[in-house]
Length: 553
Image 1 (cartoon, one colour):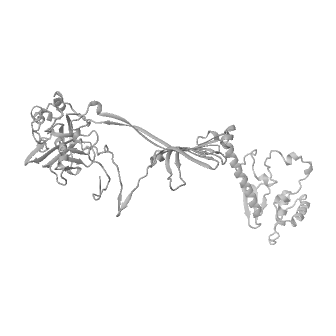
Image 2 (image 1 turned 180 degrees about the horizontal axis):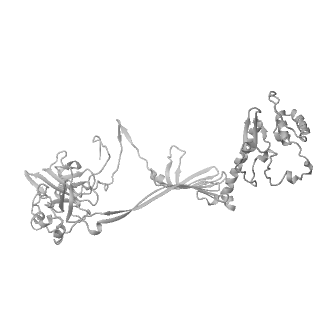
Image 3 (image 1 turned 90 degrees about the vertical axis):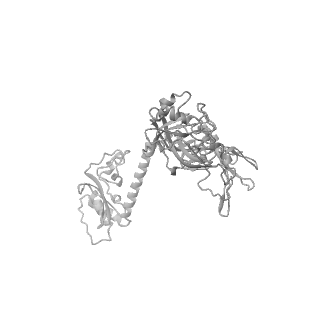
């Protein structure tokens, strides 16, 4: 009966193709029903095939619960279009049973039906292009909303416990703060790296407990933002970024209350606030940290702020293509561990020698210098064992009373008795393995303060430092580390006489013997050291490029 109904529908709906004939095998019961349906369909537009269904035999005797069940179950033999869709109570289709949609260009119809292999198991449905479009659109919309409904069901009850988006009800407090409840949203990243650095320095000149050091290394990167709302009146924003360019951007906290139009309190802000001004006579302010409030009493409006200003303004003037910028330098920000006097004599006469610039009146000309530092680069060329003596060559005053001043007018090895004692009485100290034993045996002579022992000290190249030959100081191209030792040997001419402080590498040809040199900086440099005054504290870094013209200090 169904097959006859579908076939008759196809015949009545294709009058425009008379050249194609379709033979239909009719059953005895279906023939009179086909005529009735054909007559009814002749005078109305195309409709779905299901609308041409014949009345089932003994349909009046079928209970309504079978025709229209409360819980719909897919029929094995489809009668309506709804039977093509599976419901939740339906069993899964077998793997060899598939539902196909085929377009027949001869009939200009879409054919929908269930197949096993290549054969239909029942009469398929036929649809025009418009009918198929509406049916497939409705089917896809149902699937879309069913999927969305399933997602909401799966996430039901989890919204309140999501750390990134928490929501709570206010209850009776909504009368104060307004509707919306409490909403807190967080987003961002946090990264923490930590480790340990262990250093072992096999330097006999250092105390045993200072040869091994362990330090903790921490590195954190945090970029977190938090937004909170209480009703529709109170907002809170919190930002924390360790990689921010400016300090006031690194931490930002703002609590805001917005009042209604008819309330006295219009606005309350706490944290990072700004104070704009509508007048050109009074300048506003930004980058403030404090409290701000806007009030209104009738026609009187008040803006009040109590805060700390965390920004500053600078002005730059230019003239003739040049930029003039005023600047300030803290007197304590001098270049540390880079510039050193060769002796106390040059330190004491520095100002006097500079009195008649550009002419220097020191009367001294330094001929040659050898500069030694602690070897941390691991190079093996241009290295020697050295013993750096703090009071070597000092003619005015010595830090250790063991050595007497001989009355020399300028620094020299013979200016005090230390060099003579080291080369005669304590000559065994040249053996670097015996240095600590010999020198520590001198009463009141302390290692690290009165002398430094360096194995394989590195001789600096002339390109690594500069020497002021008249004023008697050297300037290193790079700063020394705090635990490095700096020592020199130099020769100069004064009043036609040549003087020498320390020993050059060519003076002692035996490389196994240590050199006695002048210590400009010890391992632990502090104001109690005898050579603390040799480090220059009047040299400052201004900028990468400064022109001499019109420069004023």
